[in-house]
Image (cartoon, rainbow, N blue to C red; front, side):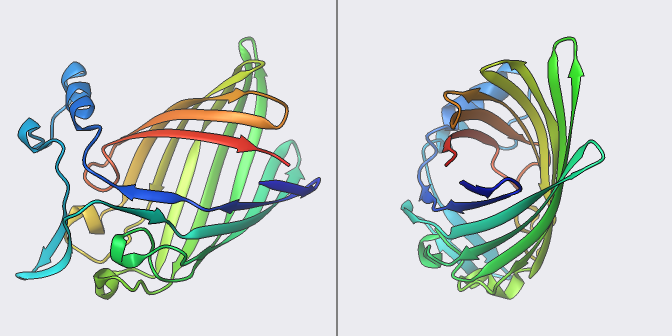
Length: 238
C-alpha cells in the first residue's frame, strides 16, 4: 500500500491461495457446541476430508477432489479521499488480473474490475474515539474459464458497514458486516445465494507505519460463505 499524495493511495495484493483439508473442522464443531449453535449436518467422522463437487441434472459440472495451492489473482487498486463537511468520503477503482489458475481454483482465469464509494465519520466518546464506516461496490466479472462459466453472473453488488473503536493508543477494535449479491445463477444456495458475514477483531499499531490485524468471522447466511474464518494481516504503509 502506497500513499503517493495526501488524498491518493494505491494498493497491490498478490495472494497465495490454498485449498486443503479441514484443519479447523474440530474447532468449528466444538465452537458450535460451546455456544449451542446448530451443526448444519456437520458430522465429526467427515472432519479432515476435502472435496469440491457440483452436480446439476446428473451432470458433474465441478469435481475437485484433491487439495491445491498457488498464487491467486492479483488485485491493483487506486483510491481517493474526499473530505466533506466532517465526513470522509472515498472513491476507488480496482482491477483483478488472472494470475491464478482456474483449474486449481486459485483464480478465475478472467480480468475483473470494480468501482465503489466509501464513507467514514469519527466521533469522540468518554471511552475513546469511534469511527463509523460503510462502502458500496459494483464488480464486473469477466467470463471465467472454469466449468462454472455457464451459470456465472457478470455483475455483483457488495457492501460493508461497521464500527472501529480506538480503545487504546496502540489498539482499536472492529465489528463489521459484509455481504454481496449472488455470484452464480443457481438454485443451490451455496452458489446462488447472497452472502452475509459478521467479523469481529482488532487492529494493533506496531509502529507509525506498521500494523497487525486479527479477526474472526462467522457466516450469518449459512452455506454461502465460509462457516468460520480467521483473518491475520500485517500491513506496512510507505
